[in-house]
Image (cartoon, rainbow, N blue to C red; front, side, top):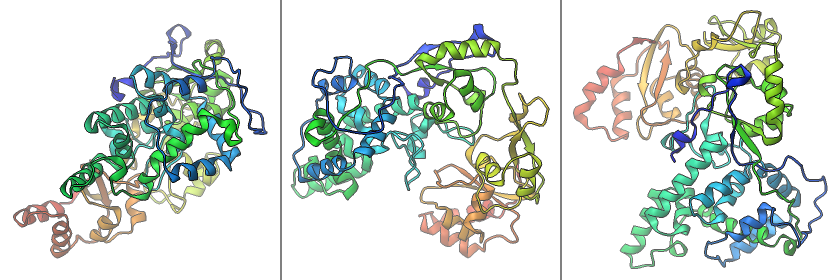
Length: 474
């Protein structure tokens, strides 16, 4: 099943009879106690998910000094282990079910521990995010929608299915789980080149013999260390809080926009718990067109259903507001009863931005019906801010960076990001908009820049013509 189809819609209408609840794996809502006295009851019931994972171990055991180093690191941090496993109990059953359905080693279900420590909102310096740490381009390749409202890389279901699809592809490509895991961390192209290099020199073409970055060299030893600790936590002075071998969440959705806080309240769960199950939503309003599923704890579905049926309040308390260019954000925040920090964070604005660029903003509802207000937002990541006046539409090519484009057009990176929804990473084919240019780059600058990217000289004239064309923002 592809990650695209995995994000299929389960419609939850505002009316109770339209609510659909599709059972999807989950775990218990009970949380571990505050102290982590690390012992394990050897008579744990077979209902314990940890035992199910142990029973499915199938990867070749790795013996390396690196494994011992990582075992010691985890063993010295029982509080870290507890936080990680408490977060993971929400997601593990679903992951284990899918891993087993595909006939994969159960250790694969532990990978989010070394990728993200089961923190769905964590991001890396390479802009990877979610429990499986997808970078933007790979996430898009596996069908994970990414826009101003929503980031499918943090969706527990679609990211898990995408990660397992990718790992299966890598295993089919290399025929070896160690190489597949190395490629998941390092990139399939890098592993292929390393294998070709070894073959050329007559060296063994296997994981242990490859020259690779330190992060990748430690990747499988970390997994082996986690595997060993899960296998026998008591020998490391650790205890694992039991995780019931049963679904933790159920998937529902809505045919209307709904406040995240209201949805949490209807389900009688904390906002933190709701966000932990639905981390893909970037804004306080869950936009229906992006809401392929909402995840709720299994034992809260009936509560949600009953409260939804009796709810008479509006589902949305936010609206779209078209700001005027030059409006001070602090004054806007005061007008709508928000702190400046809340206004900026709600709208994904840089803390450095002091005045509006004329973009659409999400603000508290002022009495109007907001159900259809959000159509004014452009949900493409690079276009969420509405630019005014003359703009240049620049198509990103392989090798482009924000700093290189900013130098070419003689603008700051901060301005470039402000015009393009605070974009942090670029992908080939993406459009970047540069507004209100005082002058265009000289031909020598444009040619020099494109030469660096390997553009053939016969295309320079065509590029120059395209670069100098100023177009009104569509």
